[in-house]
Structures are given as structure tokens and as C-alpha cells.
Length: 211
Image (cartoon, helix red, strand yellow):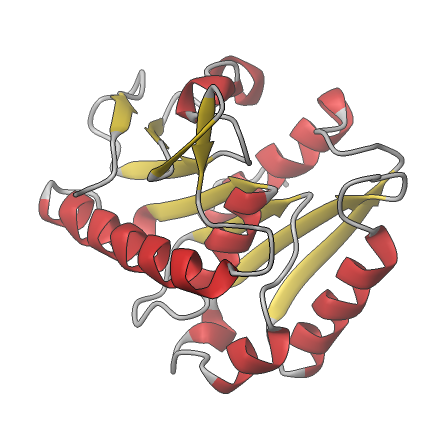
């Protein structure tokens, strides 16, 4: 079954810029309804995707209890199909940003760095990399061209900060273009400070950042 999702059109309807939003464990796309108002980017369309597996009152992209691989591979395929679907609807991959929080961050990196097409950008918040050595061995031919913003909290009690920083360093050593940003935060988004970093990165991805 294809992923359930909700599309929110940009204020500037002629724009082809799209952000696909991937939520964390137990959440849903609706959990990020606040994001467009926070980012204040009138040219950006949004697609809020729900993960495929029910989890309490929300959804999960994969089983995190030690059997991650089957769910990750299944969700990867579904997200690749979603990218194809929206490209056919007039949203080119090179105008599409993948954004993910926690489990959604993992899926953003897993999909984006394996994609055969260059995306506008990848934004990963408070997540981690599944089997970084495997991912490095399976990078797509265009992976080194992907623009990546990866943020994490120094006080995250869910996904330890030091381990994630080491994973990101592994990917950077493999030649990936990753902007790594640390915030004094727990497992969350650090308010306007982090939103400003995201907004600036998005504008740079579309070549419209202020000088």
C-alpha cells in the first residue's frame, strides 16, 4: 500500500518547491502542522507523510527493538515511490527537500543518500544513521552532491549525542556534504534558534538565501 499523506499548497502556487516531512516514532504527519507557519516560506509546498505501521496513537517507520532492517527497507521503497509520484505530478526531485525528525531523520538520510537523483536538500533532526558503514558502501553515484543539514541535541536522552556525532563524522570522512549543528536541547526542535538554521539552509538549497 502507498503511504498516506497530506499535501499543503504553497502560497505562491507557481512554485515547484516541495518539502516532504517525515515524523518520528508514535507521531504522524499532523504532528508537524505547525511547521509551515514557523518557517514562513511562501514558495514551499509541504507533503506530510504518515509512516506505514500503527504505533499507539501514531505511526512507526520501522521496528526499533532490534529488527530494524526489514521495516527500513520497506519504508525506503515506499518513500522512493513517493518521490517518483510527486515528480510525475510536477515536483522535480531537484526541487524537493526531505525533512525528518528522529525515525524520520533516519529515513531521510537512508533514502536521500541512496537516491539516484540529486534532491534540493536533506534535513535530519535528532535522529541517527542506520548501519553507517553499510550506507557508505551503498551510496548512490550522486550522494556526494546531496546537500545535508543534520542537527542534534547535546542533552538528548533518547538518541545519545556523542554516538550520532561520530556517525556523522564517518559520513563526512566519506566525502558527504553535511552541515552538522549542535543545540542545547533534548529530543525536540530548539525553537526559533533551530528554525532559523533550517530556514537559512532551505533558502540556500533553492539559491535564494539573503546575502
